[in-house]
Length: 238
Image (cartoon, rainbow, N blue to C red; front, side, top):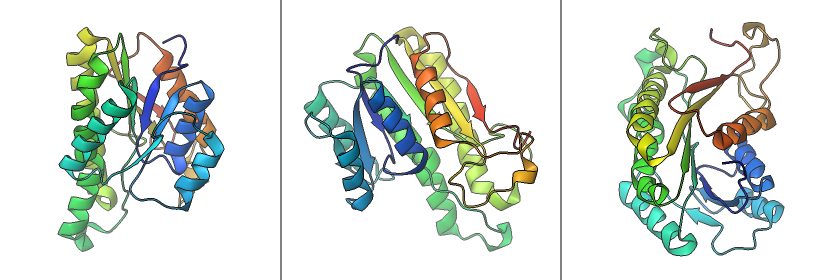
C-alpha cells in the first residue's frame, strides 16, 4: 500500500489512547476511518469534531464481546462503505491483580475483551478484506508477548495476548495467498499508562502515542511484512 488515501479503516476502541492515535494517523494519510466505541459518549463526539468526516456513518456502537454484535457491525460496514481495507484490533481490557484474588468474572472479562474480540473481528472482517487487492490487520499486544515466563499478576492478560500472537501468525500464514498482511504491534509503558516505571525501561523514557501510530501506519504500508510482532517498548520487559 504505497498510498492509504481512500482506504476504509476500522479501528476498534478508537475514542482514546492508542486506538485514537492510530485512527488520527490513518485519517491524516487520507483513510476513511471508522470509529468504534462501546457506547456513545463525549469522547466519541469530540473525536468526530476533530476528524470532520464527510462520508456516511463514520462511527459504530457495538459490544464486541458479543459475537452477534460483531457480525452485525461488519454487515453494516459492508452495506455503508462497500469494502474494508484495514482492521486495527485495538480493544482489550487490562487487569493487574494478585492471582489468589482473581475472580472468575475478571478472568472471562480479560479473555473476552482481548482474545475473543480479536478473533470475532478478524473472522467477520476477512470476507471483506479478501475482496480487495490487499488487506491489512494490525493486532495490539504488549511488550514481551510470546515470552513463556509466568507473570502471575497479569495471567489472563498474558494468556490472551499470547493467544493473539499465535492467531496473528496463523492467519498471516493462511491469508498470505489473498495478499492480506497481518501483524502485531506490542507497546510497552506509554505516556498514558497508569503505571510509569521509568527505571525499568532501558531507554529511560515513555512510549509516545504518536510514535506507535506512526509505526502502525508504516507497517500497514509495507507490502512484505506479515506474521511479525513488532515491539514499541524502549527495551521494556526484555
